[in-house]
Length: 160
Image (cartoon, rainbow, N blue to C red; front, side, top):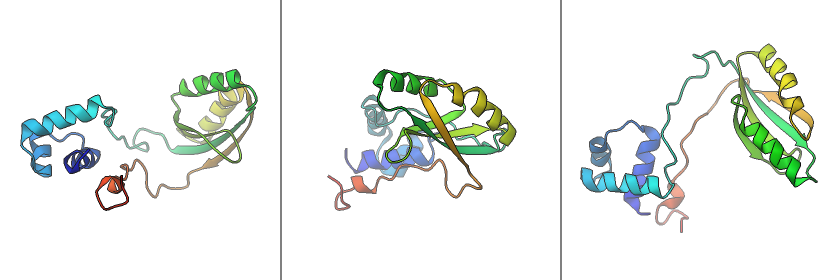
C-alpha cells in the first residue's frame, strides 16, 4: 500500500459518493489508474463496502444504549450460540468481545427508553447463556461514525 492507496482510503471515508474522476483529481492520479487501485483495494478487502450514514434522530432512534452482557465463558458452544443470536438482532449496531468485566459490549438503538426496556426484557434477557445486563445510555454524541485513522500508514509516522 502506497501513498495513493492511503489517499484513496482517506477520500472515500470522507465521501464515498465521489466519482472516479473527482477521486482521481483529489489524489493526483489519472482516472484509469485510480479506478484500478480502488478495485484492488476492494478485492483485497481494504474497502469492505459503501453505505449511507443516516441521522438516527431523523428516523426516530432517540436512544443509544451501551449494554455490557455478562455470559458464562466456560462453554464455547453456548458462547457461539450467543454470538449468533446477537448478530441476528437488527437493534444491535455493534458488538465487541471485551476484556475486564462482562463478556460483550453492545451498542443498541431504540426509539425511546420504554421501547429499549421492552426490547431488553423480550430479547436480550432471553438470549442463550446471558447471566446479566448492565446498560448505560448516551446523553449526547460528541463524535460518532468517524473515519478510521490512517496516519500510521504513512512513511515516517510510526507505520511499517
